[in-house]
Length: 163
Image 1: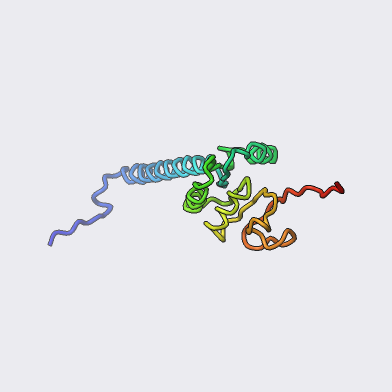
Image 2: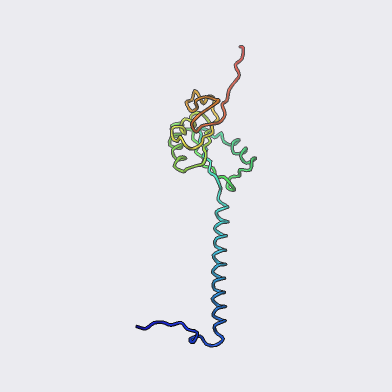
């Protein structure tokens, strides 16, 4: 059987140092390319938004919400991405809520009671923030003090007058 043998006798005098240098340069170049690729991938990934917020409503009432987030440093395209589902047809809210759940958004903002009810039916795990006239009456919170489940937010109340 023919075997390939590697001995110093096969390397011409003075060439061994050049071969070692060439191999070292090759490995350094490979390592440099790998580091460049890793840094480019990391840079591209860091350009991706960090969180995804689902926004759902039967009217577009989210402008103030998004403005408030931007004032707190949450900038769309920089560190947050919005998935907006807004409609004038209340009957499509259930479909939109299910879609946000499938997208695995990090949190859902429901701009009104119908949207909040649709989200509450679609998920019991994704945190949901709502602005609703009465989340207890809407059936999405156990009480104002302790809403329970995955729904929290603000109740819009009006003071009762004496007539």
